[in-house]
Each structure stands twice: as C-alpha cells, then as structure tokens.
Amino acid sequence: MLKAVRGTRDLLPPETDLWNQVEATVRSVLARYNFHEIRTPIFEDTSLFARSVGEDTDIVSKEMFTWEDRARAASENAQSLSLRPENTAGVVRAYIEHGLDKKGALQKLYYIGPQFRRERPQKGRYRQFYQIGAEIIGPPSANSESPARDAEVLEMLATLLDKVGLRGWGLQLNSVGCADDRTRYSQALRKALQPVVHQMCEDCRRRAETNPLRVLDCKVPEDQPIIAKLPRISEYLDEPCRQHFAAVRSMLDAIGIPYNINERMVRGLDYYTRTTFEFTHGDLGAQNAVLGGGRYDGLSESLDGPKAPGIGFAIGEDRLIMALQAEGVKAVQKLDAYVAPLGAGMNAPALKLARELRRHGIRVEIGDEDFRLKKSFEGAVRAGAKYIVIVGENEVASGHFTVKNLTTGYQVQVARAELVAHLGRR
Ligand code: HAM
Image (cartoon, rainbow, N blue to C red; front, side, top):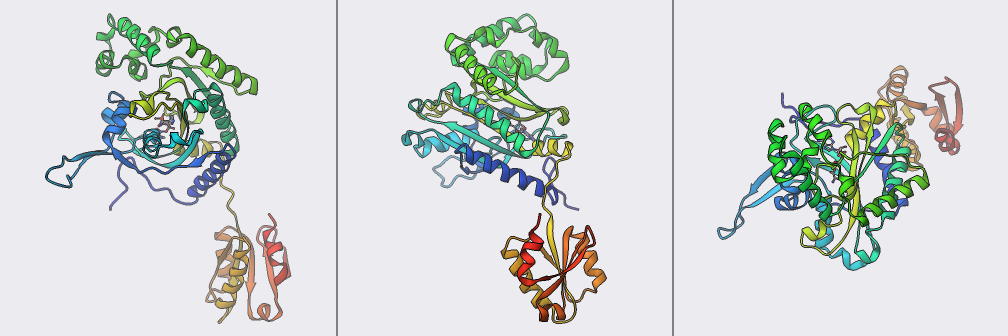
C-alpha cells in the first residue's frame, strides 16, 4: 500500500475543522492589527536561505530539501533550488524585489502555509509542517526599529493565543544584541570554549570555530553542564541594545504580559538581532515551542536590499493544534439540519428546500428519497445534525414541515417561512 512519506501526514476532518477555525480566528485578529496577507512561492533559490537563515545553522546545513534544477540552456548553469524551510527569508526577498520600502510605511504582512525541514520525525516535529507567521518591516523613517513594534507583536500574540482558546502558555524572552555585540560575544564564547570544547560533541567542536553562538542550540545532554557555564549574552549588549530591550520589557510590564528572561535562547536562525522570543506550552513534550520569532534588523541589507529593520514570528500550526487538543478545545462546527426526502419524487423538493436554507447560512445535509424514515433518522444522527426536517408529499403541499430536535426529541410543524429562524437558533 502506498503511504504518505515519512514525516508528512494527511489532515482529515474533523481535525481540519479545528485547523480552519484557528485560521479564521487568526485572520480576524491579524486584520485588527492591520496585517495583510502575502503569499510567496514554496521553493526559492537555495542561496536565499543560506544567506539569511545561515549556512551553518542546522536548518540550512542539514535539513533542507534541495535539488539542482535542469539548466534552461547549454550556456546556463543549473540552479540550486530548495523547498522553503521557513518564510521570513521569502518575505524579505519579496519586500526587496517589489520595492515595498518605497511605500514609506511599515509593511505588516502575514502568511499561512507549509514549510519543509528534513528533521527526524517525532511528536510535534514533521518534515512538512505548517506555519502561521507575520512580519513588520519597513524603512527606518517609519520607525521600524522602535521597541514599540516588538511590544505590539508580543501583545498581539498573547491576544491571538487567548482568542484561539489556548491557555497555559509561557513567553520566553531574550535579546541577542546587534551585529557588533554578537561579534564580541562570539569572541568571548570562542575563548571560553577553547579549554573545554574537546569534551563536547562533534557539532559543538565545529561550531566553536565557525559560529560559536550555535553551540548554545546544542541538545546533547553531556554538553549541557559546559554550556551552562559559558558567558551570557546580556553582558555583551551595547548601551542602545540594552535600552531597546529595557523599553520592550517595560511596555510588556505596563500592559501586563508575563514573560521569563531566557538567556540561552539564541534561536536556530542567524538573522536575529536584539529581541528574540518563543512561546512554549507544557503539553507539547520535548518540542515545546508553539512559536518563535524576533527582530532581524540587518536581514534586508544582507540580501542586498535597503536598510529595513523588521520583527516577526511564526507559529507552528501543527503544535498549536496539538496543544489545543490537549486542552480539550474542539471545533464548533455543528450541522444545523438534515433534510430527509420521504418517498418517490421527493428528492427535487428536498433539494429545493435545502437550497433555500443553505442560502440563508443554515448548515444542511440531505438524505435520499430511497431511504426509509428509520434510515433517514440514523443518517441525521450520524451526521451530527441538530434537527431533522421531513419533506414528504403532505409537507410540500401544505408548506408546513415536520421538524424534530434530535437532542430533545421535541417535534413541531414549522411553516416554510419560519424554517430559517427555527433551524438557525444556535
Ligand atoms: P522557527 O523557530 O524555526 O522560526 O519556527 C517557528 C515554529 O515553527 C517553531 O516554534 C515550531 O512551533 C514550528 N516548527 C519548526 N520546525 C517544525 C517541525 N519540523 N515540525 C513542526 N513544527 C515546526 C522560524 O521559522 C522563523 N521564520 C520565525 C520568524 C518569523 N522569525 C521572525 N519572523
């Protein structure tokens, strides 16, 4: 039997009802904050990810689905393409490509879609997974660097998680400083690692040379005591970065958003500057980050674009849904009515009635004139309908329909003109 490829999966109803409910809530919350949707391709030139996410990150060095596209002409080289492992790089590429900086204002863009990473599949970790993400990016003249944007994004996330019904989340907050701070911090890490790195895993030994910050991502248990003693990023922030972070924290305090400072959290992507964050959830096990994000003030320039500071996040939708399910959240998608044609020739009048009801927003399933009454009732119950509406010859002639509430068992005759109001009661 052919099966879905390892690390990928099918999403089926009724779970997809919950996905759609979450996405609808998210879209409406994002609209209130003046975000608009952007859709970028699911594959890009490989160098986009190497230059943004970073050549030495796990994502780019180990986890991308990459292939050589056939050269279009003998004179051309084959192009290396990759399925997107994340969406921030694509958004910033589009920002530059379409000259969105020239609009002057902040761009508030969001996306919902699949991302691809060749990770070892486990609970909450897939090779095709879905992200709901958003980015605020713009020229310095639009104050895109302001800590007020960081606070706005974090406040929005708190609101968004509340609105989709998630409880029990925690916000982990850190600042990784600007490029200069990271250079000084990297030097300090390199120095501190020198006498101990030979005791560490192979990845750490390599990273201690190439990109010491990535050592902090290491998950190998034996390396943790060494990592715990390494210098802390907060000691290397310059005065503007220190002040920026203090301003973000004081705004969060003022609006009452709780957070923990987590200095080990440097995030697994190289483009971050200053504020970084993750929202975690207790029911997710080892993969406990529901979402992650941060500032990337130099990303546009590193892709040859204009100066365009930005901040954003991506929610792991698979994990958000898993956390909601763990808390018992279900989609409220109840079928209002089951229209049951009773007897030969009743399919057409039943369809006509269903058409009227559906046009008025009533959720309707329809039976078949070949079904006996018993089978129609069974069908209505199986479909989860609140009411069954019988369409027989008498009903059609009189314009009054037998309507039975399948929960209470209460049965009444309802005039055609009253049906929408009767069935639509929620
Ligand atoms: P990220 O931390 O790599 O950040 O991913 C964000 C979220 O995507 C994670 O917190 C997790 O919930 C989910 N996720 C990541 N990998 C997987 C996987 N293999 N299976 C299931 N879920 C996964 C980013 O991607 C950045 N682009 C976020 C961002 C936007 N930063 C600034 N703007």
